[in-house]
Length: 246
Ligand SMILES: NC(=O)c1ccc[n+]([C@@H]2O[C@H](COP(=O)([O-])OP(=O)(O)OC[C@H]3O[C@@H](n4cnc5c(N)ncnc54)[C@H](OP(=O)(O)O)[C@@H]3O)[C@@H](O)[C@H]2O)c1
Image (tube, rainbow, N blue to C red; front, side, top):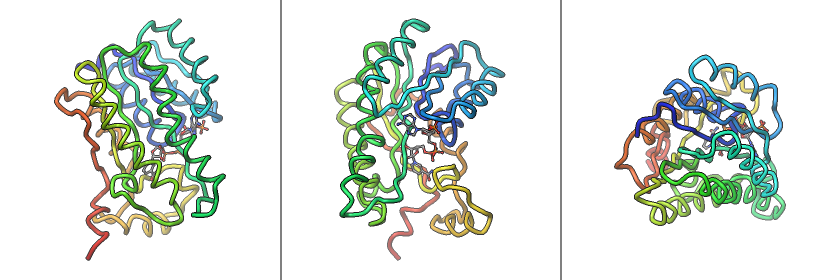
C-alpha cells in the first residue's frame, strides 16, 4: 500500500512507540491522528514534529478504554476526514499491581490492553473500508507466557494476538490485520531508567540492549507497505524469545 496521503489513527501516540509510529507515518506522507489519554503537552509536541513532514495532522484526546469517549473521538474524525485508511491499536499500560490474586489489576489490564482495541476497531470500521490495522502485542503475548508479575499483561496480549488473527480472517482482503510483538522497548512504560538499569534490562535480549522505539515503527511501516502480510504477528524482540531455553 502506498502510504502517501493516507489517514492514520495511532492510539497512545503522545509518547513511546506511538509517538515514533506517528512521526514515521508522517514522514511517509500520512495525515496522522495522534490519540492520547492524559499527556496533552507531549501530544502537542508530537503534532509539531509530524507537521514538519505532512499535512492535516490532528491531536485527539480520548481514553480508549471508554466507549463513550471513543465514539466522540470518531465523530470528530468523521467530521475532519470522512474516512480512515490505517488504524494502529498501540495504546496500552503496565500495572505494577499485576499478580495472580489481584482482580482489579486484571480488569485494568483487560480494559486498557485488550477491550480498548476492540472498542476502537468497532468504531474505526465505520470509516475504514479498505486499508490496514496493526495491533500492538508483546513478546509475552507471542510466547503465551511471561513473568508471573505480569500475569494479566501476558494473558491479554495473548488474547490480542488471537483476536488479531480472527479479525484478519473476518476482514480480508479489503482490510489486512496484523500485529507486532516487541521485546523490551526503551519507553516511559519502564519509568525513568538510568544507563545501568537500561543495560540490565537489555541483557534479556540476544542483541544485549533494549530495543529503540524507531525499530518498532520501522516494523509498522514495513507491514503497512506490504499487501501480502495478513494475520501475522511480527516479532521484534532482539532475540529475547530464543533466550528462554538454554
Ligand atoms: N515498552 C515496552 O517494552 C513494550 C513491550 C511490548 C509491548 N509494549 C506495548 O506497546 C504499546 C506502547 O507502549 P509504550 O512502551 O510506548 O508505552 P508508553 O511510553 O507508556 O506510552 C503509552 C501511550 O499510551 C497512551 N495510553 C495509555 N492508556 C491509554 C488509554 N486508555 N487511552 C488512550 N491512550 C492511552 C498514553 O497516553 P498518555 O500518556 O497521554 O496518558 C501514551 O501515549 C503498549 O500497548 C504496550 O503494552 C510495550
